[in-house]
View 1 (cartoon, one colour):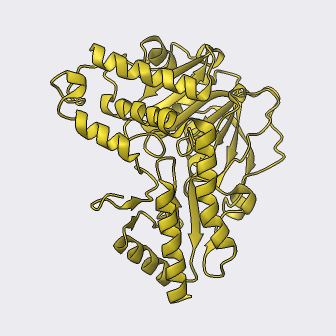
View 2 (view 1 turned 90 degrees about the vertical axis):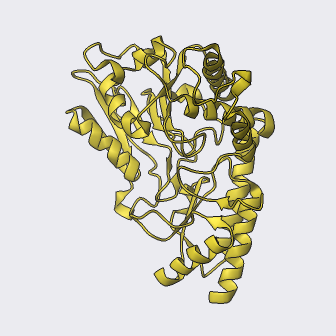
Length: 362
């Protein structure tokens, strides 16, 4: 860690790989020999064509996408996708299933209901404050899609494996765990992910949509809310968030060329999470909030014996160069977001601090 940088455990906007930040720093005044900043070049230039085309190619390689899948960069974040997915995919007489595993699932359900779409909440973990991922779900046989949130940043739960839906394609909000592990892409018809948690800065949302679902896009919705608009123009119907797309490209390059792909990334993520969960499991001082079988590898949520100790923990951690450990305002407690860019050294430093704080206050 450089002397003037802390270990960043923020949930989003979150940590970026240091080599990516250094590359951005170098190109901020003169990108690719253009004599202009990456924030100044035209989105119609060859320079940006190279950026967005490389980003698309890397997404396809990393996830092993076949030609049926389109890779789009859309503004509005994942929150815009809460309304865009049902708007584009559900016509008159169509229905979709939703699984409610917390705040972001609840918001997605609400946005579909606002439009008067026919949806069914087929499972929910609300009965236990969203501490687990439901199992044994009976999906609707003729549903156009089944919507899930793959990782819950607030409650610290994650789908360890993806459900069998009886043929309905999965539509997944993967904002906080995209590119953290390999995917069985044949299960997914649409994936969307706000960049600011695991692959870039705020301002762009990655959308991956399969051809059969793209074909459902109606001509009767606003142009900028149609997936087809972005697919037909390589995400450049209007000016895209160029800097955000550029950063995503660099993070994908880091994932491919420095980490070595999703298998190695997944192994590292399991190692990082195990350090924290294993200590909490043998401690009477720290208590994880998610059921063991549903624990997130991205967001480790935990409580201390009292709120006073939690406040002291966060404050002292910050003083020791460990930032962003306060839990979400809606639930309190503590949270360590250990996304792909969070190095193993950061988690090791956090674990050392947790042990020291427990010895002093336990």
